[in-house]
Image (cartoon, rainbow, N blue to C red; front, side):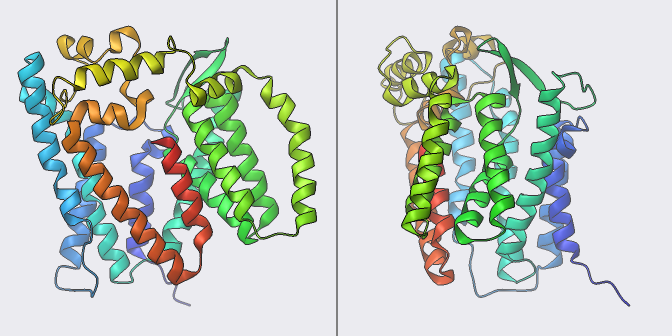
Length: 361
């Protein structure tokens, strides 16, 4: 019996795993990851060069416009901090290549070589493995030295410094599966583990806010008997007091309310807005931390980090030009999600994913 396999899908799995450095088990350099991504892009484009699909690349101009953003942000850094163009452009090559992955992904989908369900299953499987490896590292107190992760301390306890992008998407998928009735018990367990991971291992306030938003929206769109919802509400009420007393929840609440002007995020936002007034259109340029004047000007020497300030940090680097680019991309993405959800009658994952991105940005 001949075993059928999808080589394109297998390569897609490999590329995803390479981009997370084989679940942090192999210390791959950025350049190796970059070359693997370029190889995958070239392979798919060459393989299916003569095959045309009815669908077009809806986001092609948005993707290609990243070249303009990279050039303008590098130029601004040269003008403002005397940072060389090389130091601005070189680190951003990864950003551009990741965006270019849109083309082979779209081609494979449009030619029906892979399906959207294949991608969701792939993220689900890879993220689960990544999640449990990171949990094992945390439980060991960082003693599993063969896992290439880092940690620091927050609230007197270990906090993981790890990439959680796919794991966050796993949370969206498991919550969506739960309210659709797919393997409800196992998806509930994975969702709970995910919340514990973010709350007690990553200890990231912004992610906690986004997770909370996802859970609230999922609860209200879940088509279930009223009595079942009441029962779940009572269970939640019994757990909430424990969560309310945790230090990270108190910090998360302050992040939402933003009533402390001395909070580092509030300080960062005020600083970014003040500096953006000087260069609103093109922003303050790409910050290469290897160039001291740029590092100091970004506020990082005062513990002000771009990632902590979401879209404002992005605007600080790329200016209003970058913000407009992001909004166009985001609005177009939402429109495509709505059309897809209506067509497939699967509005759950659309609503939940939008809630996640709205809160995280």
